[in-house]
Image 1 (cartoon, helix red, strand yellow):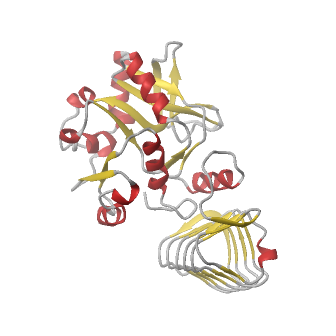
Image 2 (cartoon, helix red, strand yellow; image 1 turned 120 degrees about the horizontal axis):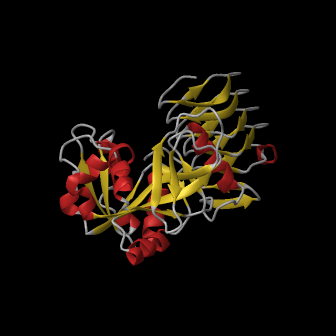
Length: 320
């Protein structure tokens, strides 16, 4: 949830889409790094929304975690994964769900390679005919997949046992398919699963290339160069872009930055090459390093002349 896409936690991008659909009451289901997530988002007032939290003492799965907060849910509610980014209208899908009187509606999108996703086949009336989670195939196949966004009626949870680890994709949806009560809507828009390194980097690139209505945050210094607050670029002509720099960033002379975001407080040395990368806040990249497809956590240190080719990620505080 807190991994940044263009210097903004992924979950914030999801919240923006919810708010567009007039959804302002949001419950976070949290286990891992629960305190950090709650501390960052707070009560939602700074977002013009209202946030509450459902804490898990042990992992309950995607459906089990929702069952854990069932007493706080309305009769119709939306479930959205915290590690996706999308630009399609949730209101349109909600209206379709209500008009059809569906118990459960899964939002779908087409991808080039379905191997790592839940693959869905739809009938002409929008009923899901089959749902296969992460099919075992070596061939690249395009198709409709689960986006991790669901519109559900509360009665769908009645058969989910409390306190048990239950998953929507593995446990609940196959049963709903067999009953003929799972609907699907092909959204046909911009969507990426940011749970993979490749997904994060590709989503960032597409936003820089204006392939989505999601804009690059910050002020545009010149074409393709964006800043959030004051940033010092010793040699602006070498940066090239597109690139985004957070507040307090310093970039040395002769350094090239393209299709990359650099978080606040970072210091980038001279003659560094950064391509297709995500550099989180307070990271130091020393002179003549080369980063391609790198995702660096907060407070990392990259040595002089170090060369990294990914996609690969390093945790907070790593020495690379």
